[in-house]
Amino acid sequence: MAKLRFTPNDKTSTELQFYYVDSQRDWNQRSFYLKTVNKQKMLTDSIPPYTTIKEPDYVIGGGIFQTLHLLEKNYLRIAVMGSKKTTPTQTNPKGTTQNTDIRTYNATITDEHTFGKLALEGGIKFMQNYYKKYAPGSASIYITNQWQPMTTSFNLGTSYKFSSLLTANLLVNDGVVKAPLNTIDRNIAGKDTSYVVLKDENRLNIDLGVVSSIKNLGDIALTAFFINRKNAYEYTGNLYYDNLGIQREYLNNLDLRSYGIELGWKSPLYFGILSSNINATYMKTLNVTSGANTVYENLPQTIINGSLNAGKYGFTLGVFGKYVSKYTASTFITPATPTTKVYIGDYTNFDLSLGYAIPNTPISVYGRVINIGDVKFCTVSPVFPDYGRQFFVGARAKF
Image 1: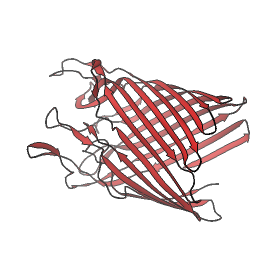
Image 2: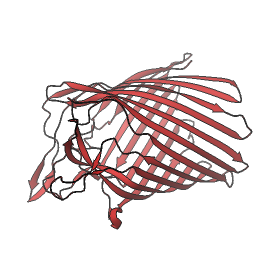
Image 3: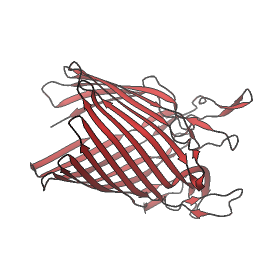
Image 4: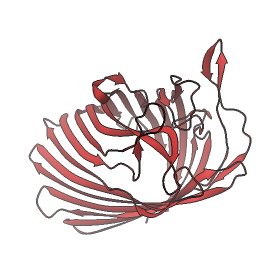
């Protein structure tokens, strides 16, 4: 990753960013199966690997970020970003792949103004994908040179500083998430006899919280949030072919409401060496489609992240932990019965990083171990478990 910042005066600042990620990985393709234990259907561990797969996964991108301070106590920020992602769309047992090429473009405009203890901020964000070459579920017939629907969101935020120890924040975000092109909502009992075009999603998010800074304890933030997703869509796992012969998946529209609370803590620096932070979220999501309130189990209720960091004599050491509660999945799964539930998540894993800044140079080197315990877990589907233990090494330079 490279950054270049130009600040000709205190009124304007321009930053350019460029990054490239090469994530080609070799992994053992695995599967899962259901078996009966004491007359009950149980999800077993993955079967032994039967082949090694090479997956090229490249991302290249960058952006320009402009900050303007033309008025007193006012900051206008404009950002334009783009990226290109090349990744496999299908892998067969022989280890060959068919690549896809997706371009993503983002533009954001925000303005922040301070009136004494009160600060106001508003903004708008645009995001759009361009499918240069993409095969949704098929490695033989591609969508090519096609713009996808643009997603637009608006946000308005305010904060009030009661004292040097306490600040209250309110953030409202509203936007429309366009349905993927040529998608069909299937709400049919029995045979496919009728089709309905999928509706666009209207998403409203409200955050209300307080932040307190306490000496020798650090910064503590407590936030309550509400998310209303009208016409959200989910994949059904049922495939079909459109009139171009491209394999697609039926989607369903549904209405979801989420309520939750988030707690964050960031410590001060202890003994000039140690620091820590914790972020915990509890969320309950209800499916309110057609007026029926039922618990929506396709999202985890609890997520906890934390880290412990130490630095001395140019060395930095970090230990990172994460817990995700269980939730259900249906992607790439053929259930034994219509009521069979397959659970994923429900894991705890740890990462470790070590870095060293070479004295009298702008260069630092680092290494990282992801998933130290080689914990086997899934976040999308048991058919495609997440990677186990991974090792990374690299170097950074600042000029």
